[in-house]
Image (tube, rainbow, N blue to C red; front, side, top):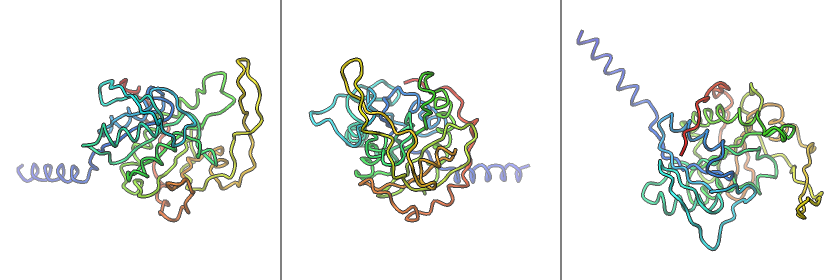
Length: 287
């Protein structure tokens, strides 16, 4: 009996030793701290036992890149390690690292999950990508994640994107357990398709196109707004076409936005990572 108990205890201790320790995570985005993507990711990370500090813009800051608020920012604590920042994503990362988490630095900065894909040349205007760039510039590992939107769903609130957030959050939570995803001097940019059964991971390169056109039209309020190029002509093995085909695309970006040769880090293992579209269906944890 004692021998059996000793074996059980030894097995338990071995499993505990092998289990990855929880991470200190600075979680941010550009859609705002109450957006469904960041809330889904926070819920998944907390469920897995990580120490999550949600520090994100108070309002939608899409398209802000790495810009900052030069006159200074205010922030509000909502309890449960949630702060909203009256500024841009880069402000949130800088304030988080330099002030809020000054004595408890993060192991990784996660930016997302963005409401809409960040692929091709559009990464340079993305606040989601800008937050990750800022973190890496400050010397911290980072990862950016976005969920595809289907423009045909614009009038119905993009239901397939909302359905994607929970399982994408579960995938990200699994991925960051592997230290190979926590790079130095560069970061991974993940984009998740809205297809119910993704075809797998696909390490790739940025498409050469942008969906942002220069075809401006005047709106009823007198503002002028550019349209979108819905079918850009891209290389089939670049991220935009692969995402449209149902792959989770993975690009590796440097701190100056230069797309790095994916072979600078061996990402072949990521193609066999587990994907469960039924995972993470729990409701997000409210701030």
